[in-house]
Image 1 (cartoon, rainbow, N blue to C red):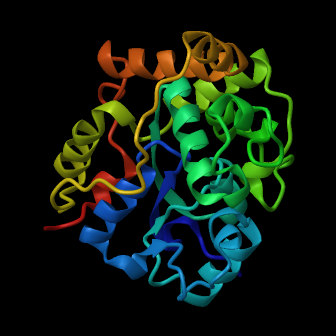
Image 2 (cartoon, one colour):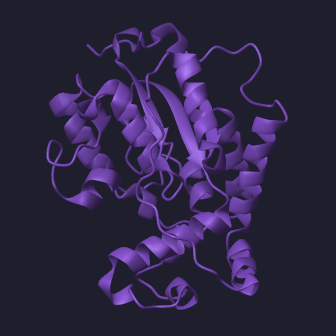
Amino acid sequence: MTDSPIDEPHRYFFLRMPKTASTALCQRLANHFGEAAIYPVNGLDGTEPLKLVLSIGHLRERLAARGDEIRVIAGHFPLCTTELIGGRFTTLTLLREPVERMLSQLRYTRKVVRAARHMPLEELYDHPPQIDAVMRNQMTKMLSLSSTEVADAAMLTRVEVDRDRLERAKEALVGIDVIGLQDEFEDLCAELSARFGWRLGDPETVNTTAPVEVPESFRARIAEDNAFDVELYEFAAKLLHDGGWPRPGEVPLASADREEP
């Protein structure tokens, strides 16, 4: 006999796009829920960094092992992961202006990859395997991947990002319970605290790199290469700023499962 939906645990699914202040939000979430409640926890859930944040199979294993502790799933998993693992979820995500997101990714890669340490950002952008095509239009991909096409290392799934996929990403974004923009990060935290009663603690800055000057021609090239993400980001900003989201009259699932201070 299978559990009915009412018996399934309620969790929060943080669609965690890289280089969008997602690490800072995870730390703030841990202030409220406790570290062990935010999957993945290095050590507790294993020690292989890529497996922890990318593998849906490993996520399933950890849910089976300690699902009663896990309240928030916050690896780099696409939205369709909720279909693959089952359960009841309130969803949230952060998006970032795509050119700035890519430049931040390049700076971070140069910081942590020894072979890339002295590369100009323009050279690194063209240098597989440091920056691969899977990083381009990544926000669109993470929202639009389907459960039938996603690989186990889900964020690395190779698909063609086209107009149809962008429209699917927009539709998925409208269905997410809480969305925020990286450059309005504290507004998102205030929204989460107000809606769910979470105690997120004081602002924290983590995992950052110092901006560097790059030619406008390089910025233009990144924007062109990530045109679908640019349009998706503009769509998200319009939803937030023009009153299209949150949807009037709709009550998110978490309202019935509100976290008490």
